[in-house]
Image 1 (tube, rainbow, N blue to C red):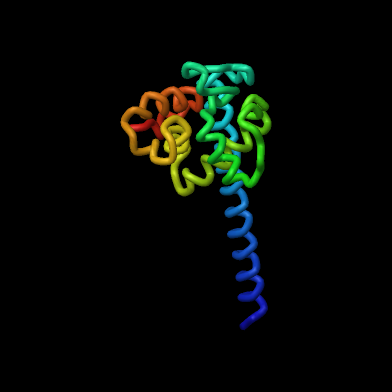
Image 2: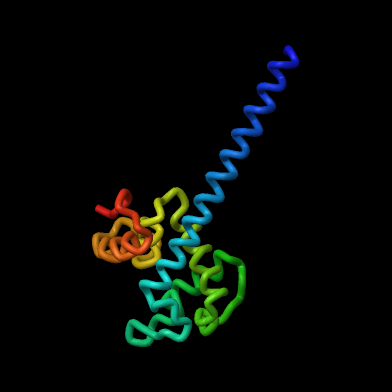
Length: 144
């Protein structure tokens, strides 16, 4: 192989790696925006919020079953009351959405938060996704 061909292959590989890293960073940034939007919709980001008749707590209004599943996915042993800790709650929600929302759009991830692992399929989660879309300014990716 000629040196210029080798150099071209190396440059192409580097550019592809950079583009892949930029895409991952963009997706991670988008997920962080989603987490902010979820906290805003759920509780106005109030870590002391209690809702759903006392069955949901914290900024993300997490139910105990969600918390247990999310901490299992994350590999931590945190008590349900720690869902009031905004840093821990965010980690659990992120892990839950990355696990159940792998290869799903941001708004499908929002619907999973609202309706469980299959929430992206449920009609009942569409209004929730619309609220999230408004916050994110996502006119192009509004739910059906």
